[in-house]
Length: 216
Length: 120
Image (tube, rainbow over all chains, first blue to last red; front, side):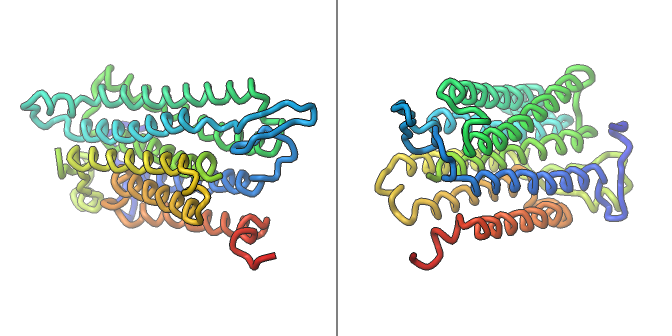
């Protein structure tokens, strides 16, 4: 990325980097909708279990309970939603770095390092929940090769998890820059672009949580 | 921390004005987070009420709550409500195409016909 002071302005008067991230997010919408479409088309068409919301008895008489763990996923969803709050606070802190901090509350809200750490920690916690979920599914007999549900579920949530992982790495690079030379208003656009990506990952999960986990 | 301006210091004046945006602050952000949390609680609560799950309102209400959460995050946290209309077009255009394709595919593969089609 070029020096923060060199703006990449276009004939529209808008920075080309921000246009690029929105175009990228638009293309990512299409990617995730194609994965969600695949999941919904295959929903209820698995010949063998385990199933997401129904009990399954195998030909050998083995009982499988519904495999989705709603309490755990609800907790991870809440963590990811809160990470979006932390991210907007990180952006606001960077944009307002030069403003005087009179009270303790101003200093807390104005700490970009604190909010970037909080966002990265929340993202890592979400990934931990996902690792726990995937591991428990495999132990309960559901892998990516077991049935149509397993194939479409692991592909969809795995792609989302990969995006969260990329987001956490992006946040850690911003943190490294913040510790090295400090992030200020001149870096606001770079942080804004990272924030847009992070919020997009969050809105994708909002759709996945409802369509995959809650709708039976 | 409300109503700050975000643009590069080095940008030419006319260009900088084109990108000048007024984003909300902490007072709005925490309320948005609270609303998102409450909607999520309502979604999960609905999942555990058998009579609600069995009713015809279950799926539409979950989809509506999810759509509201989606719109809130995009409007307030992604600042699309306050940003340039080109950004709105870059996001909503592909989203509309993708959503239309999703609905078409669900009809094509019989996932929607089974619910909304004529009784067999």
